[in-house]
Amino acid sequence: MHVRFFAFLFLMLLVPAAGVIAQGKNVQQVEVAVKKLTKAMLDSDVPVLSALAAEKLTYGHSSGKVQDKAEFLESFKTGASDFTRIDITDQSIYFVNNTAIVRHLLDADTNDNKQPGHTTLKIMTVWTKVGSQWQLIARQAVKAQ
Image (cartoon, rainbow, N blue to C red):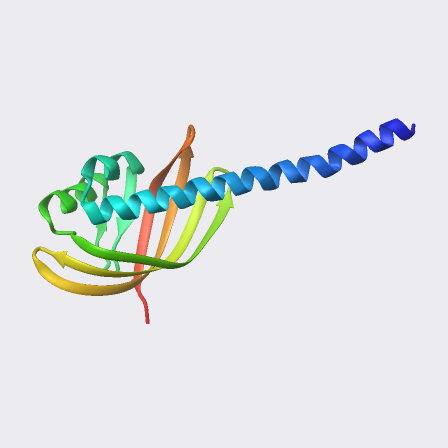
């Protein structure tokens, strides 16, 4: 009987620890995906942006404009979206099953359509895990006050 009790106790301690380890791995993977997205946006690297974006991407701007994946990629191809500096701070990541909700503050310099600018935005992105990869499925920005 004591062996069963200790085996049960061991399993009860091990299962939550395994969940914490898996959660930590997911946090790291999502952080890497956000960094890849940021770098690809800085570099206007359309192939990497395409690989990170889900087919059903909905990408919302602080102006209210919403783009699908094709429109999002086209804006980087044409220079309509052109970042020259992006700083991400105050990032938090929450999980619901295979979905990650990321919030952060984005401070950036832009050169959209060859017009220099600056923006500070509160961003929420939603990522979904497809196989072992995290893909951006949604993004919404609001102007920071």
